[in-house]
Amino acid sequence: MNILVCMKQVPDTAIAIRLDAEQKSIDRSEITYVVNPFDEYAIEAGLQLKEKYGGEVTLVTMGPDRADEALRTGLAMGADKGVHISDPALEGSDTLVTAKVLAAAIKGLPYDIVLCGKVATDDNTGQVGPALAELLGIPHISGATTLEVDDDAKKATATREVEGGFMRMEVPIPAVITAEKDLNAPRYPSLPGIMKAKTKPVDKKDVASLGMDPSSVGLAGSKIQPMGMSLPPVREAGRIIEGEAEEAAKELARLLRAEVKIL
Amino acid sequence: MMRNVWVLAEHTDGKLKRVTFELLTKGREICAAVGGTLCAVLIGSGVEGMAPDLQKWASKVWVVDQPSLENYTPDAYAKAMTTIFEKERPIMLLLAASSNGRDLAPKLAARFDGALASSCTDVVMDGGRLVGIRPVLGETAFVRVGFKSPLQIMTIRPNVIPVTEPENPSNGTVEKVDVTFDEKDLRTKVLEVTKAAGKVELTEASIIVSGGRGMGGPENFKILEELADVLGAAVGASRSAVDAGWRPHSEQVGQTGKVVNPTLYIACGISGAIQHLAGMKTSRWIVAINKDPEAPIFKLADFGIVANLFDVVPKLAEEIKTMKTD
Image 1: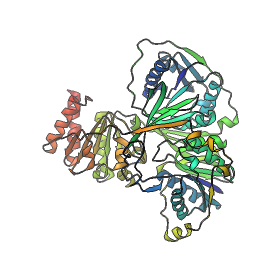
Image 2: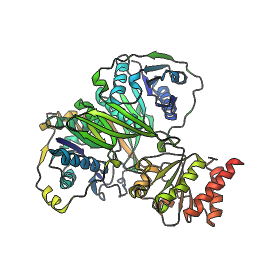
Image 3: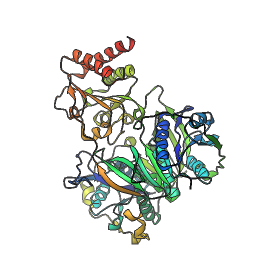
Image 4: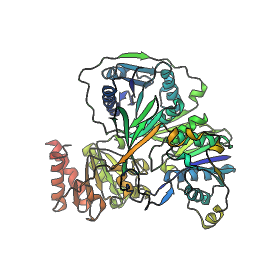
């Protein structure tokens, strides 16, 4: 089975993000980068499929040079090879452009299934997976909390959470499946895995080698144009309700009625 | 050119969801600013009965009411939208940033080469153009985004836009659209839909009672459920509580869970890790109950109680119950 996993390198979610002095972009000086947590579930799902059906897991990422570290993490988990799309022209790409670039890279590869994380924790859009499926002309299921792939019957079944419940869906493969957190427990890279990852093949691609026009990607090709950043209003610490637990609970109930006005 | 703003209605069990009216409120505001008209799109099976409620807001209500649309699938819904788009197109399409809205919007953007801003908290006019506002990086910052496309698509988070009913109901027309589905449009099959009965959905809840590591174990969430019952609230959990297996991931609030915007968020035994705050700090009111006075959650709580939550929470539930029966 040919399994593709799209992944992204993102700032570590455990670290507070600050804006730079002009508050136009983020201060990158103290940021450490990790594999997008949702992509780890996608990689794990890919590795489990390989264990069941054989074949290869190929990681695909678009990002600057530093994204190679994220690819190596995925390779250390057990993926076989990587595709790294990196080009200064890609700077500022919106999600639709990102999906187009990934689609261009994927069209040249054999695949039976494409796995992505449900959402990247930095931009929080969750758009690339479904857009990618549309561009590839294949179905998708987003936010899978379970996934079964039947390679003989050429179909995938997944559960996705919807407001107030769950929905179990079936699609023919190839398809794009985006992974929700509950999907599995991603393995940690083993020490031999880390050693091996260093020499696993990573195919470097740029915009030209994908046959794309530089003006169709990056900020120039994007339909979403960032116009600046702002900080959310600062929340002030409120008041601590003093007194014994019982008294405090009583006072809180009073405040919920008098100030919050929910009772 | 018609400068129409369209709202895709969200509904469940034959009723329009509140977020639909939030979108209509915002859509009406955009129309007033750009001189457009507001239209609604209603897709599903057996949904036509909901059209009159939309007619009060919209000049036109597009209705696709067919058995193949009983359950949401991206393929069938995209086909329904495509069929409508062949007749007319909006300059802006608003969808809820719900599980289905966020699933469909990127598919439509890719199909029609539209500009899509996802999970916005607002859209404003700036120098004569529409600008979407969306939180990024775990709600650390807001990005302002402009659109460079004749088709602008936006998903807006539930619970952020206060609904204001139309002063003069518009009594719009209904246009039924018949969609011909072929096999390719129905390749996604829904095998089963399970609904948790009587549960308040986290992202739509006005009040959330949430528990963290301080709850000590899964059995202790009973006191939170009791408080939630009294308040008509949803129960949430921190990542530690979910990772410990005490609560399902569907209840996780935070950067790798759900982002919520309730009127009131009551955090019990939650210290306030950055990734948790990313999911709830836009709540209108925050209450923290924690025995550790140094817990970071107190830095943004409107009301804090430094005490053992097992003493406070049952007492609070009792007090509120008494107040409600008064």
